[in-house]
Amino acid sequence: MQSENPLFADLAKMLNSAAGTMAGMGREARDAARERFKETLGGMDFVSREEFDAVKDMAAKAREETEALKARIAALEAGNAPKGKKPAGT
Image 1 (cartoon, rainbow, N blue to C red):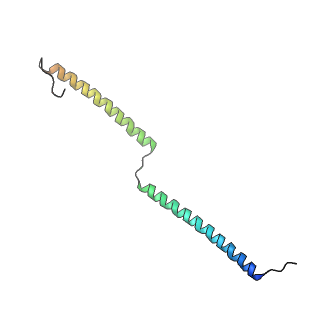
Image 2: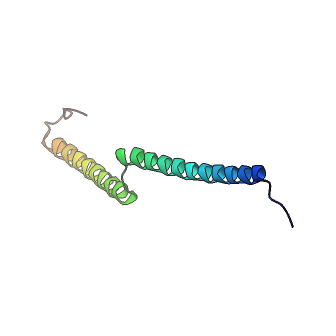
Image 3: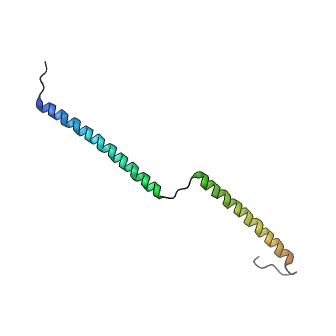
């Protein structure tokens, strides 16, 4: 039969409690860091990929329309300009 030394039993209980406490502190620290990260990212104005692509397509369409309008204005100015003079802005 093995006799139990109270000093070793108390030491084992204390170490077991310390390990549990450290594990709990680790979980709390991880959860707090995760929350802080979410709050930080939540405060930033990020857009989804779909929104980005939609705005990109709108900008490309606007650029094409602008170029078409510039060409149309140039053609109209060329047709109405007096002979021998260049239209303004060219």
